[in-house]
Image (cartoon, rainbow, N blue to C red):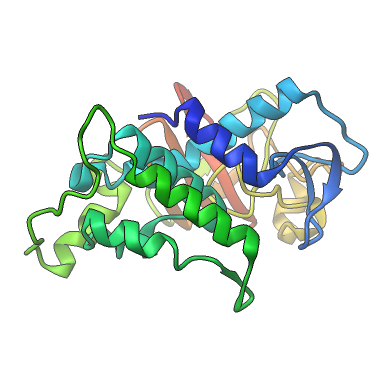
Length: 258
């Protein structure tokens, strides 16, 4: 499932858009609707490009919502609202209590996530109300407030459902050495996903800097890397953690780590 235009417009309403690069509160160069990957101060983009970057960045958050679809069978409005929530908060794991809460409880809990630094923010209050309203909005006459059958699965079983890797055969082995296979170089990011900031050259490990392009910090083709963790977002979106950070191992039909 992909987020609809209705969901994207909700996100745009609260994120705002800047077509010239600026530094976010953490000092990270940012552009468009909160895009950070590869952004440098002085960069400018068009509105069309800002929209494209937003859709690209939302893919990781669509995956964070979709991983619970087997449990909840989200309708489009619920899905849209939760992708907006995840894009702002980071995930819906806590909101759903890792898939153990009912639809009604999830709806009720959305409003509680309205603070930053322990202080209630009016902007977050408005955003949570808008997300809850969309979440509760019926699709084709079907109420979103239907209570599910109580979940009697054990905590261990629920955690298994939570983990995307359980749905696919993990294509990499932790501790094994692999080779980066790209046309030129591969960005190292601070997290598993294109929405995370790129790790700068100075923040790479000493060994990483030996194999990186100084101007960007990206690791060159042919670099040997040791996998420390594997994150399977989907069968076509796989990330691995190496000593310097996270790199995209599989993107669509392209395999960058072999």
